[in-house]
Image (cartoon, rainbow, N blue to C red; front, side):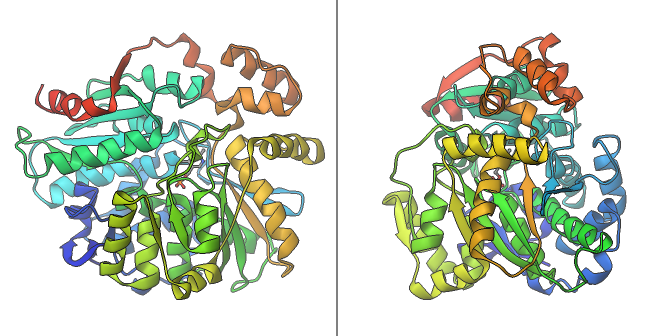
Amino acid sequence: MNYHSTRNRRLTASPSQAVLQGIAPDGGLYIGDVAHLGLDWREIITCDAQTMSAKILHAMLPDFPDMAGLIRRSYAGKFASEELTPLVQVGDRYVLELFRGPTSAFKDVALSVLPHLVTEAQKVQRQDGDVVILTATSGDTGKAALEGFHDVPGTRIVVFYPYGGVSAVQQLQMTTQEGSNVKVCAVRGNFDDAQTGVKQVFAACAGKDLGGAHLSSANSINIGRLAPQVMYYFKAYGDLVKAGRIAVGDKVHFVVPTGNFGDILAGYFAKKMGLPVGMLVCASNQNDVLTEFLTTGRYDRRRPFYKTSSPSMDILVSSNLERLLYLMTEDDAAVARWMRQLNEEGAYEVSAQVLQKLKAEFACGCCDDGRCGDTIGSVWQQHRYLCDPHTAVAWAVADAFAAACHDGAPVVVLSTASPYKFPAAVLHALGREAGEDEFAMMAELHRLTGVPVPAGLAGLREKEVRHGDVIDKEDMLDYVLRFVRG
Ligand SMILES: *Cc1c(COP(=O)(O)O)cnc(C)c1O
């Protein structure tokens, strides 16, 4: 399989080149023909999680040698269980727990693999010099990327996060990061400012002498970040078959808490590979730009930006939607036009025909902080299952979806983070005073529910803060250049 830019089909790259570059030179995202990989999905769903991952990645990234070995090295000792992503029944619904990795967010599934893909791609391409990973984070990608890349020879990493825009736990996870090749910096602005800033640094550095270094991305704009996520849809499906809940070939609906549209797009890739995915339900918080788009066909980022209790979804420019638009239309010129309009005017609108195609595969819904908190409370009361605010947004949207869709197919809610990453919101939802100290809140939450605190979070308090930089978004380029050259 070869890749090309979503904005220009003639701008091609091999899989390893696409992983190294992160983003296409014209600002488009790399995409390939995932529908014709020749994968036998019926066989894949019988495999264990790591074998599934290796088979899918081998098909998606065929110029990497020994994908099975790469996957083994990626996950060795990192996840709570060999299963990687357990499926848990909660009432008549299922929760796909994606947060059992080292940083307690779903990003670990892919970011455990990406550093190995990057260093392998350097070998395949015979590229000398360091790869410098630039990452904008709404809270979870940053830590998962730091955890993956710290002290990996031949790589360095810079993480930008919105100042005051992440939870205290998330911030400490990043600012205490050890490693000789890492840099963590707050940007005055929101996530979209940080993400736009990173894209501008890429554009400004294209063709510049970076002292032999090369820039790449750990965000889901990088196909090497997206591809490892396809596995867990197969895993959930296989588990439902094993449990006797469905027969092979029956469809399953997935409800996905969505920000940059990476997770849900991986589900669409799985569907294109043949997996019987029913509806993919896109769940948003109060930043409901995707709900509006999937309802009206009009994408308009000119709207208030809300800081919510599910900060990893506080996003108005949802990058991977661009890949979906390409897959739906196969019209690179149209995608280029829409993205130019989004950039210059802040909005674009797809045709009624494209909207109809989208609606056939994607449902949507949104949920504000009030309903999110109520949902955490009621799921705990009814099922004794503790979910984080992102998962609760999806659960609430799943309620509305299930009320409208009575086809009897199982509904799987993707759970993207541990509740202990957001102790204030979760405690408040359980009717307790949250207080100031997030570690005291974790302890209180544990006392109340008995749910174990993940080891990586429990040990944070003792760690030394190593990264205190705060800059304006205009200064991101200088900051990166100093790091790269310095
Ligand atoms: C990143 C993240 C999301 C959003 O995922 P996308 O792939 O960007 O749509 C949702 N929940 C949590 C906890 C996250 O960290």
